[in-house]
Length: 536
Image (cartoon, rainbow, N blue to C red; front, top):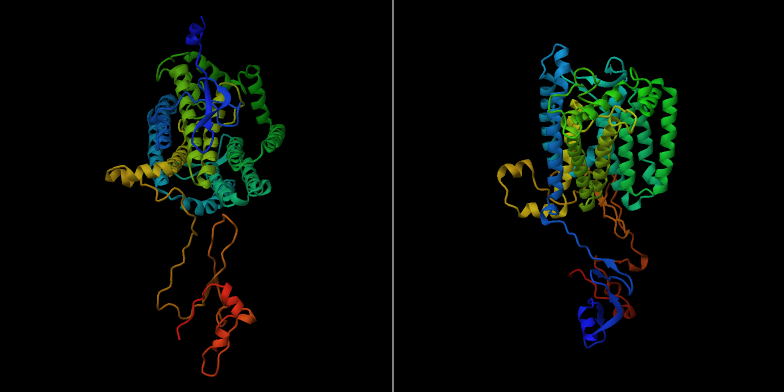
């Protein structure tokens, strides 16, 4: 009976460890259950990782492939839906039904060119020109407020008429604020504190938000706030500060709603859209009807009824409602999944990169894009108040599409600069077109160089120029050694390092150093190493 019980009893393994110098193993006395392993002291067990992602899903180029695949599918869905949602309204306005869709395709082609440019941009070049880009964006936000320059649409002066399209400076401001903020935090990362984290970002955010408030563009302020949240989160701000910012943000929203009647109407229509179905709740109710009509499978591509001038801004703000009506719940689920993949790819790049600037910029850009998409889909389904934010890569809009594709190009560039991706690309056999379109980064971390590199002087160019000396490098452990060239005014001698009086040499009448002064004292001669001497 005892032998039968022992034969059917579960096997219990006991961990062993070296017991002495003879290499034998002795038991720790603590049993380890099957399927668990212990990595710490006795009694502490951690579960064994039973699920491992396949190799093709965790390869060196997975981040780049996820970004390209998710963004490409979202762009294709967006082009199809813009053609479908805008054709009826264009025909009712005595325009060709294909005109808005063709315009969107043209902007998509321009955006793809911008994407290829972003893929080839060195990271150091982006960092050097980010402050200049921020100044240009701020100047454009000021210029758009001038009546002769800015163009007013739907009660907001937020566009500049370029003749062939309308340019929206707020989209550029979001991009350069993300890149500039990542650059500033990357420079200060070694000595970063809460004060140095907040001081450069919050004042600039306040100035840009005030300029957007004057347009007024409440959606632009919200998007800029998403960029700020991404930068502060990646910078390591403690969570309690986010709670304080949330309280301040809620107070600011309440104040902005109280001083503007149309914002109050948006909030009340969000809480109860059926209270005023013919005015403030008209757009929200039509969006609900579109989603309810689509059901699970949708009514079919091109068969939407709400796009017959029944749903305002069907091709831009409420294109997600038309997508749900024509493609159903499954189509909406595909779009949400693609944005989830884009978010996963952005955070994956930030986790695997070796460049601090790339990490900060990836988090800020990902939070901005995915957060804006969540806000757009949220107010379409009635969970959030209407903010006027478009759906990235899907909604109609020339400036937004071009800049979004440029941002996707930056993400691809950052993904290809991962250390494992750089090593894989150097070993891979690629054709000439692939090497030209998608070049291999020289190194995972691109050094930051000044905008203007000084040309080295030739042999005959030393006359008339002041001599230069190198400043002593910093002795901080782990800090970068920076050689600073300090020019000496003309007419002055180059300062030399002082020599203690007891180590100075004196010469005799013939210019030679006496032997007694050249040799160290006997006691020091026995303890100091041999010194190099000049030949006689």
